[in-house]
Length: 450
Image: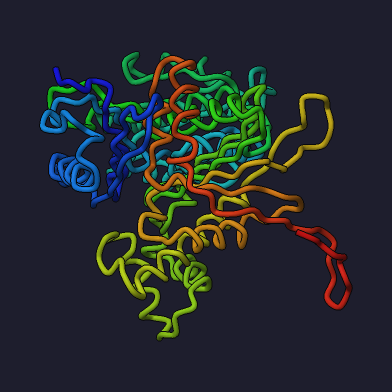
């Protein structure tokens, strides 16, 4: 025990970087005293020791018992690369709805199977992919006879492949559960039926897929408990912040492996979307020139197109190499492209009173490893450039990435207290933006007095 037991560290273990912050009581409230980030995979002790040393050097009276820092509590979360799934359904309409649910839960879809688009040989090859984590067979709650027969045929085919490949897990959604006897019991996960819903609506199947995509116990030091999923904890923190402020709060978290977007109100979650395809540089961009060029289109750097493609791919393969200078500009371009993809997929459902969906938010919170080397004004411009919608919004930056660890606190009262105390320290104001709709070139929009 130390003389200052309430001081603690927050640690957000990302796929490309680790962010740490020191939080301690000061003058009757918790304050963010220091923060830093480093490449993922490095030991965190030197990082934490450096933060403590910087705080003590600035004001030694703030941490009177600083020598016991190694024993202080650590509030940690971890994210992992997206798992890979093959989705299968009895018709293309059901397949499209299934893909929305699975992809929106943070999975990377590497194959699609339906009688209308895939033959038996291609389906077999997809299910034998070496790095496949899950096959998902989806159906409605009460499918038509034609769809039911197609699902039975798909289940028979996938079960035959599973007999040749040990460890293949299968999620049976909706009426597909009727085919469970074809698979070993330990390999089957049951899920709710596939339903048509806007991409940002958290359906029961989407929620299950997101839970299955979380850490499975291989995160953190050996012998320690499994770390909470950083993406899920970020969602919890945004919900708590909306409840605390009694405002519509939107959060965007752009990472190397995936990005997510959340909209919450005091009444609860309004929208949630986590996309592997909205990562800073998606895995597909490593081999797909069109995706690499779409990212390069946001860059202001003048260089040969082939060189820019290689530089974009190096951001994915070597995230911390060349992070300064032109590399920082390229990372901001990649962040803009990721936000653009996230915005293109963002579709909300109807409001609780039945009105058309409202995309307005009072507060926009930006976070994620994509902005680890970005100056705050550049983050603000990236948000305004990509998340365009009419109205006024205030933008803040979770610069120390403390929201996800705070979301790991179990009690809502504890989260409210921490967020209230750290609001001014952890959420760096980026400014406010007013975006008008219906503007035309050459027309006067009006006058604004400040």
